[in-house]
Length: 272
Image (cartoon, rainbow, N blue to C red; front, side, top):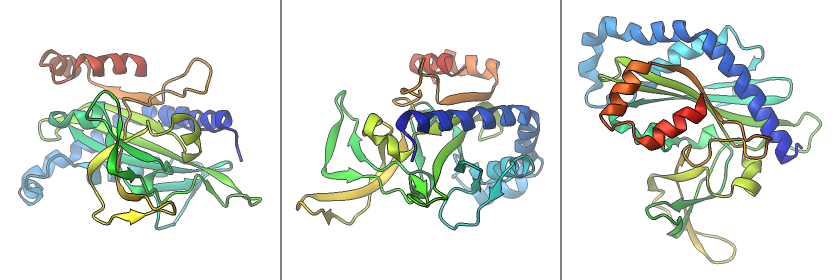
């Protein structure tokens, strides 16, 4: 089992590795994302009003490009991100999120993460006030991924989670920005506590009772990237985010419209 510092070191190692790989594939990714426009009239009416999620098509493009570049073994486990593979010292999960600029909060503040995409188990706090508070009943994340696969066995390997987030405009036609982010492994709850998570839309309807008699619920979680975006245990606290692509003209246009607020601009400057 790794120490907390070693955990962040390996998280950063693969963040850097896949950033450089995705950066090299940037033009191919952008070209692939644009192929949907050639046949938009044939699918848009069936897509209806659900235009904020183009992740299915984006996944198809990015995964097809990455599959040929990954030096590792694709894993067939039914529980995990769509791209899940094994390397000599880690299991890697990569998932893709797409956001239209009208929903900029999902890009700037935090995005929904599936239970099968991370290993971070902690309380989810309400952030409606400056001081985070517990929900009533308390709400917790319930991740399906372990912090380590084969934990305590000779073939133990850490589980790492990464997300590619793509910000678009014009109903998904044009890409404004695309970044790769590393989410803390669940072992790091000793340091980050509840901070990496914020509440999703709704908790589970079922209220449970723990061994102490306290009632609680599991709930949908977001990776609160505005709160935890650095490797805080490493020297210099390097960023957990790498910008793969940004269209500076589109970025400045939306910044002038106040859609991209100063808080996002400050974050963006730290991500470069």
